Amino acid sequence: MQGNRVAARLRQGSRGGRPPGFDKDRHKERNTVERAIGKLKQCRAVATRYDKRG
Image 1: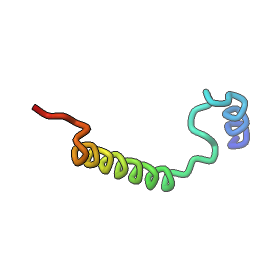
Image 2: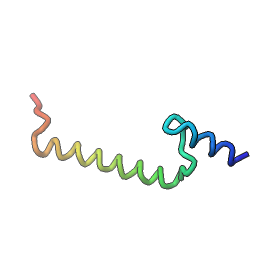
Image 3: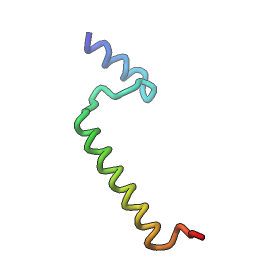
């Protein structure tokens, strides 16, 4: 049964939903890193006066 689901996802290509090789822990770590980078970018914008305030 598992093989049929993987084959169906591969046939659908990018519309196939979550990829068959999805790793929940890896995704969680990547999300944490991306959010940290986003916060750093916000601080940089304020420090270099990209965001003008009244």
